[in-house]
Image 1: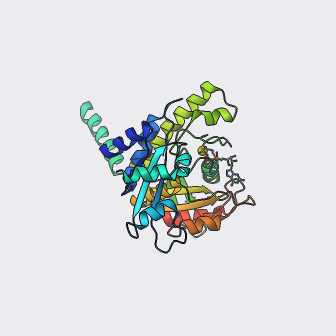
Image 2 (image 1 turned 90 degrees about the horizontal axis):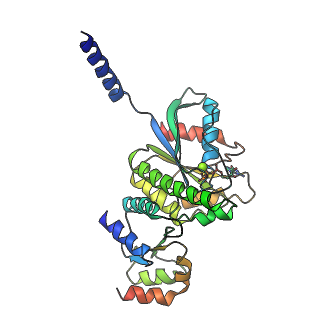
Image 3 (image 1 turned 135 degrees about the horizontal axis):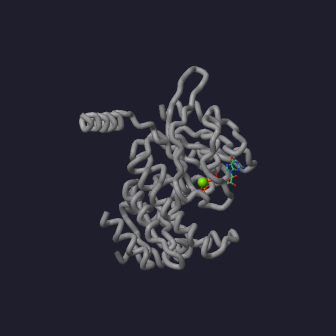
Length: 103
Length: 213
Ligand SMILES: Nc1nc2c(ncn2[C@@H]2O[C@H](COP(=O)(O)OP(=O)(O)OP(=O)(O)O)[C@@H](O)[C@H]2O)c(=O)[nH]1
Ligand SMILES: [Mg+2]
């Protein structure tokens, strides 16, 4: 579960992690468990994540949908960040797109 | 002689523990405040007369999983099933003690609750991988079912091939929309109930006999 550890360490430092392949159910389950063990008062309060998929025929694919659409149907992407910061990031779309394309 | 008897006793205890088929352990999972403890209490009360744990409108009321063993459910056709019911803490990916403070709880107690809740959720996730034989996944039917936690949890349950029943709870409330839950999870049976009022419990028990039997 080295992968989960790395993701969580990154998020705990305040970063947003974008995973192009998403996480398996087993990994998601471990991520929740590990996240719980890292929460502390006035410190880290957990994560938020969202999975975006590029579905065919979607009327308004949205920002991530459009981004994924280029990768073809069925593509998925998972975004994981510190709790309560995802909303601001969703608003700041330019920031995310810059971040994604720089990887 | 004495030693022989003692050894024999120990051996038979070992064998019976080994051979006894473990009862199905049914975990009641779902987001905080869905009504898991209310339902667990009702199931336990309906079939044994006891209760399982306290209920509250404050999220994370249940912070440690509670188990009631050996509950036998039956119907008029003579079908019956004995299982253990495990009431789990509401699953979430974030917990901030400030949430409790907002409910008027003192800081020190709030910090303690938050800590207990994180440990409880970690434990519930661990059990889901190791120790649970079937799941009742509970949702508040007045809320949007398409949350990341719900999608993740149902995905985790499916990946373990566990038998699952989805419960659309709180149908006594005017805003309840169980159809929304049925649409969200068409691959699973969805039973609309009110755990509080006891509406539609017979249908839930029928499905439990079918799915977990
Ligand atoms: N109207 C209505 N309220 C319900 C129903 N079931 C539970 N509630 C209420 O919802 C709140 C939460 O109920 P609990 O049973 O504590 O929920 P829980 O899922 O165990 O919550 P946590 O342990 O905090 O995760 C309480 O105020 C209950 O009275 C229902 O069927 N209808
Ligand atoms: Mg509870």
